[in-house]
Length: 371
Ligand SMILES: Nc1ncnc2c1ncn2[C@@H]1O[C@H](COP(=O)(O)OP(=O)(O)OP(=O)(O)O)[C@@H](O)[C@H]1O
Ligand SMILES: [Mg+2]
Image (cartoon, rainbow, N blue to C red; front, side):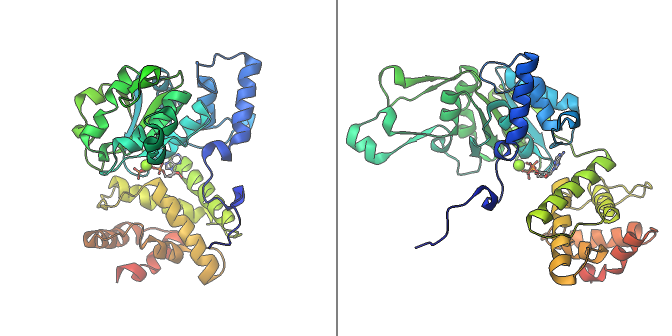
C-alpha cells in the first residue's frame, strides 16, 4: 500500500504547456476579445495570438518558447486551419514534439490528446476501445465505448498530436485516411446516429516524424497528400541557441532546488562545440567529423544540466569545462566506438588550438573520456 500524498502542481515533473502557461493563454484570449480578432471556429485563440504564444511577445509579457522563424510558425498555424493535417519532420531534438504541444495548447487549450506511435500501436490506441464489462452487460453502446485521442479530438473539436507516426505499421497509419479527408469516424459496432462520428470544428492532427528513423518515404502516398509537411530545422542563430540553452538549463537547475548556473562563457563553448560536431565544420572552416549521435539543442541542454548537477553535488561551486567533459559521457558518446575516435580528433584539431579559459579547461579534462 502506498502512503504517498496526492501530487500537487509543484510535484509534477513536467506540467503540460496549457497548465504551465495558463496565465499567458488567458492574456492572449483577452487581447483577442479587446481587438475583436477573428478566432477560427473551434479555436481558443486567433491565429496571430497562437503565433505570439509560440514565439513570445516581450511587450505583452509572453515568453519565448520555441525559437524559430515567424514565417515557419505562421505556415504551421495556417495548415491547422485547412482541411489537412500538419506533419512536422526533422532531425532528432529539434523541438518537433515541443512545437506540436505548444500549438495544441494554444489552438485547443489542451495538448494531452496524444498518440505515441510505435511498432505496436493499434487502432484501439488511436480511435477507441471497449469497456468489456459494460460491453458484455449492455452490448455495444456509447457508454461502453472508451474513446482514444482521435475519437476525443473529433467529438470535442480539438487538435490531436500523433507522435512518431512513421514508426507505426502502414495499415495503422492509413486508418487516418478517411478521418483526415472525410472528417468522419465510423464505429461499425454501434447502430443508429451513434455509428458515425462527425468531427467538430477545431479538430485537426499534428503528426511528428524523425528523419533519422524509418523513413517518411514509407508513408503511403495517399496519407502524405493529406498532410502539409513542414521541416523543423536546428536553430541557426548562435546567440539565440546559447540564450535558449542558458535559459532552459537555469530553469532546470532552479527546479532541482540548486542555486548554481552554468557560466555564460561555458554555455557558449558547449553550444559552439555541439554546432561544430553537428554540422561537420568548425567556425574557422576546419572540417570536423560528424558524430553518429544527433548533437541537437535538446542534447546540449541536457549536457548543461548534467554538468550543473555534477558540480553542485560532487565538485562544489560553479561548473567548469571538466564537468562539461564528464557530462558528455552518456549524451554525446552513446554506444558507438567510432564516435570516441571522432571526438578525439575533434579535441586535438579544434579544441586544442583555441584560446580562452573555457576551451583550455575542456582540453585539459579530455583524458576523462578519451583515454
Ligand atoms: N528551436 C527550439 N526552440 C525551443 N526549444 C528547443 C528548440 N530546439 C530544441 N529545443 C529544446 O529541445 C527539447 C526537446 O525537443 P523535442 O523533444 O520536442 O524534440 P523532437 O524534435 O521531438 O525530438 P525527437 O525527434 O527525438 O522526438 C525541447 O523541449 C526544448 O527544450
Ligand atoms: Mg519528439
